[in-house]
Length: 290
Image 1 (tube, helix red, strand yellow):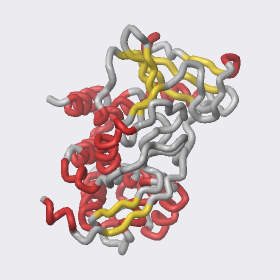
Image 2 (cartoon, rainbow, N blue to C red):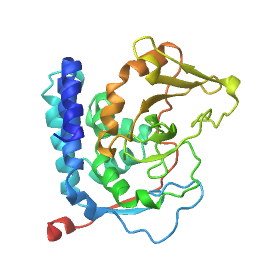
Image 3 (cartoon, rainbow, N blue to C red):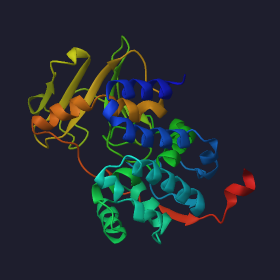
Image 4 (cartoon, rainbow, N blue to C red):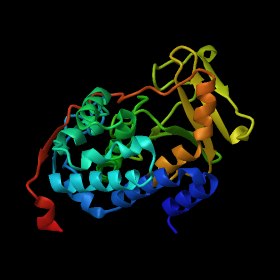
């Protein structure tokens, strides 16, 4: 079994009521493992600029039919759950969607644009956003696999140096207790500093707190900022979680998210950085290579 398979089985055992959603997550992680996505990762020739994610300003060429295939499969699996909100997604299977515009909006975490598209389709905005948020994950993980080594060694920002997303959590690794932020979208990692809020940059220890929920023990804490009211889950671990498993690790610690929300803390919505990417149709080039 791969770490992803093990993680999925563990979540299904702990949260059997999540089975419908975990089926959707399993589908997108299986798609993300498809090496076909490596073929559409654009070439880089320049070093990373200060404070600029590697994906910013990139021109992507994707095959419309392949992106649509992924979306339709996710919607079909979600629709099987039978929940009222997921049932509203069915019309999207027959709508005249501009699939590349949708992909770009999801890639850039443009919540307003996604809400507009959901309204036009007639889908529940929350359910639509949850499904569409997964659409760029295969590309993002392929991009991280290809360009992770190009991350600037002096990257000090709170957002992902690969795709510009806010961190899903922090890992405190090994006996050295090195701290790394992890991205729940591309699976990327970057060095994190102790007593630092990734959202507003706060470094004053009097404005930063660590909450330890009773059930988790000292190995999992919530690092929160009293100024911006943001929080990051922090785990003590022996080694880094595989990039493909970061999304599952985030889901597996939802109890920490609940505890943070109960204390008045929350994660920021949307992307931390405006990517300004261009997405065009590659005219079926994938089929010429695969």
